[in-house]
Length: 283
Image (tube, rainbow, N blue to C red; front, top):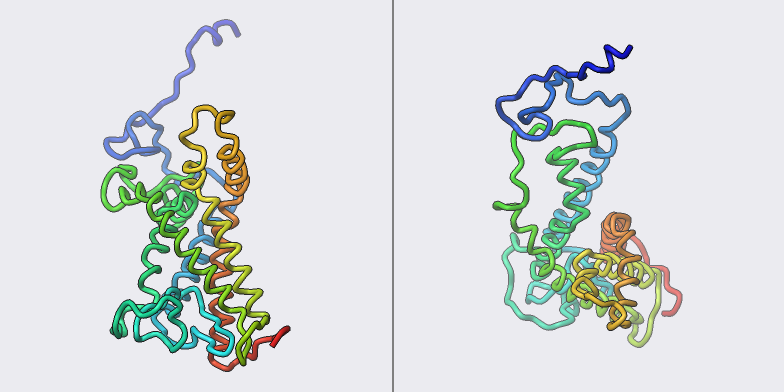
């Protein structure tokens, strides 16, 4: 026993000539992609399906150019806000016409959609989601990724991820615009104040969008990331603590807002197309 204990335990390794991570030099050569026996592939698969479903739906609706505005109640889907060209339906341009008629290959919500897309693409949670599920980098813990090397976010196009904080500022402006749209939607069919199911959906969507936006890691850094002494800045410290509480729910809010955007747009589309009659509480 003592003789065995005195001998160093060695493990035979096969050095890989190329690659990184589990395929790097000095790592044991294991032919299996993973030794896990659970359904590790289920989470990335569901993530791909969820993201793909939203992207397909949002793309179709953004280029549809129809059933996005309910003139009777001033319901405007967030996919078309702000609508600032002369191609927009009458009454849907809450901020006037900044551009003339747009060709059919340009979405009417072109002013905000690209920046909102970049805000989500560069979001810390969404990076984790699509890095693992789409790029398999890596797809799960203890599962080898198929890439030979990893350069991080130091080269194009991934270096653009570092601009996330700037897209956050634009997302705040768009959230203010969506809030204004939701307020304007409290409109009766014959003018004056009106309130219906569509208002509840629009307001709920705006609340969730605000929660997702301010729970962003960039917002947390802006409110308190540079402070060295919290005691000297009690107001900012309080704001930072509230943002930090929301930040723990950032993943849930990221998915919830995708659902709320799709539901809001779908409801407005049904009402605008005459497929569904809005349930009115105050006409």
